[in-house]
Image 1 (cartoon, rainbow, N blue to C red):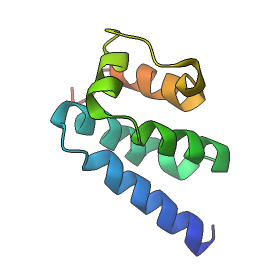
Image 2 (image 1 turned 180 degrees about the horizontal axis):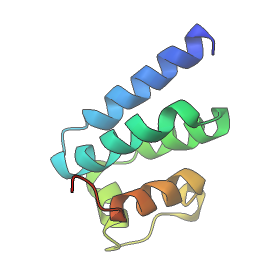
Image 3 (image 1 turned 45 degrees about the vertical axis):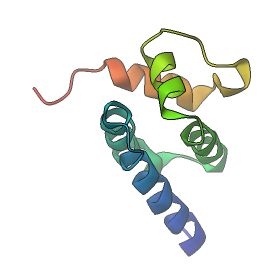
Length: 90
């Protein structure tokens, strides 16, 4: 893995953990820790696009209060959605 890819992955992990909305931090942070290292460039692009979404919107999508626009309902979104429903910390 080249330095640019490593730095990008580190930046995305940091962003996932430090959004300022605790509920989203606790979903995206562990997800990033588990998955970002395995993502290809296209998936990193999708994750980056999802990180650009306002916290409340993303949280509403994950809680199924509303649906994401079709352009953001991608493979990585589906992985985050599934991850958010997995039991953790037991």
